Amino acid sequence: MQNPTNESSDDKTTIVAPAIGLVNNQMFGSGPRWAIVGIFLILFFGALYLAASFILPVVIALLFALVLSPIVRFLRRRLKIWEPISAVVLVVGALLTLLLGFYMLSDPISNIVRDAPRYASAVNEQVDSVRSRLDRLRKAQKTVAGQDETAPAAPASDKPQEVVVQTPGLIDNAASALPQIMASTGFALVFLFFLLASGDLFYQKLVKSMSTLSDKKRALRIAHDIERELSRYLFTITMINAGLGIAVGMALWLVGMPTPLIFGALATLLNYIPYIGAIVGMGIVGVIGLAEFGTLGNALVPVACYLACTTIEGQFVTPMIVGRRLEMNPAAVFLSVAFWGWIWGVTGMFLAVPLMVSVKIFASYIEPIAPLGEFLSAETRPDEEEE
Image (cartoon, one colour):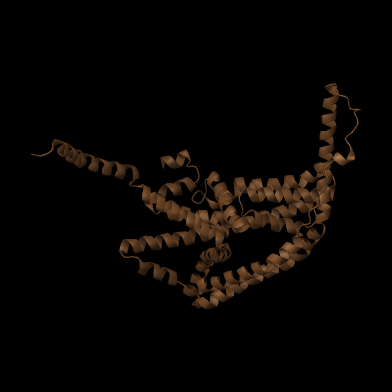
């Protein structure tokens, strides 16, 4: 005779076990996959942060290779010039351009560094002036409230003691970082030479690594589009930034700012950093203008000139020249600049937009991450939606 209790227990086990398995699959089936993706992203960005001294020169060399590869390919196909020869000419030209730029700007930069205490003193005077006005306003409020201002002052011993902390100067910090900068620059130039001298080797390996013909075609299309669009974007932005630097330098020269060449070069470099670069540039111009002109009103004149030039460039020139295809979501651009600046510092801010452009082009071809490309894109206009 069978035990009815055991029968019911077996039936419950038969029914409950698949149900538990179904619930686990529905609730936690995608859990391991997303957990693995999350762990991978954490490790990936952690590696980017920890290995920045190695990865940054590699990324910079790759970006320059994307810009210069069409030139090498053109010289090979039209003029029959061997790729290593073109690579040597381009790399040596880039090095000479860097050295010439540093040589031309060395004297104005040294003058600004020498006058840095004067600039700091001018800022401190303005801060003290604002503080004294606030103190007078506070005393006036106390007088209106009926408080006695003739009360004895606090003893001198109760006043907080001023503590002066000696920190390394700007020149000392620059001197300590110079060997690392030179090593990274040399590594990037050597790696750039090998990338340019290899010609179409990357595309050949990319084709061989794909299994099907459709994958080979799509991989080549993605690689060519990223190279073409990114090189076009970087070349165009460089020309726009150079024009902005000339405009800023001439405008500040007209209002009597010293060393306008430095401010023009500074505007050219800082404009690679959207939004934040213009703010930093205006702040530097305002501080130096305050020391040179003496009053806050006069110091705002060069700041207004800088703001006018960057506004015209950002609102009219760049959208008209770059075009709608590579326009970006402003919020996404700001997040990208902030994120890569957090990961790689100032250099990451310069690389944020080119990396964002690459991700956007790549996402436009890969369906699973197409929403990411849509998020990075600029707002679609109504007439474009109808088309």
